[in-house]
Image (cartoon, rainbow over all chains, first blue to last red; front, side, top):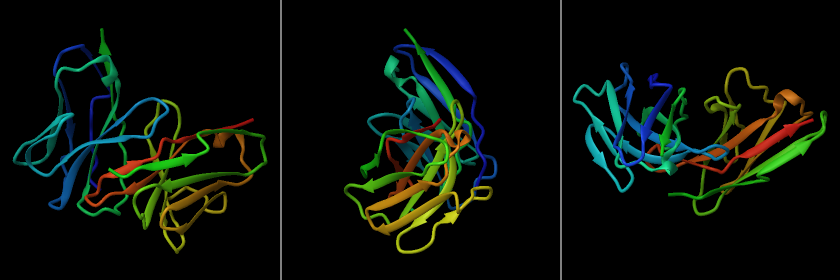
Length: 111
Length: 114
């Protein structure tokens, strides 16, 4: 499983766009990139998943460059409720593969 | 996505007792479920992979005789912490795998061992 590296923490003001970058230099050809959000005392929640280029859903966008050695989660116009820990994971496109969580990024939104 | 429930949401027990945590898949038949443990301010740590109808696969360093996992049906996996001690106090989270390697997590169970 490819190891990921993320900033430990980030602060941002309400209404701003937040970009969290994840490095995964040894990502394999079959690996997909998935981001999860976790609030205190709750299980993580799936946010977005992608393989290359750009993926967008109602919550976030995921940008993946051509070499796929990094990815950026973009949260548009954040609010206080976006304060959480965000995890970037990489793994093969099979439903039953175990996932290894890194340290995650603790995002704090400031009023 | 899939909906996963856990019961209980929190439990307090005395040292030496055993505690069972249930993980249910409410709208999906999960042949594989995962159990994680999370200590305060730390990331999730995978404990074991639970396979329906067969023995669980434990991660290195996780005692299989202490953390008993049973996955007797496609909708229920249980984790029993046997002879719990204060160092077992943690947040236990289960998940089931979706169709595209996303996982759907339960709300977690807070275990406190006195």
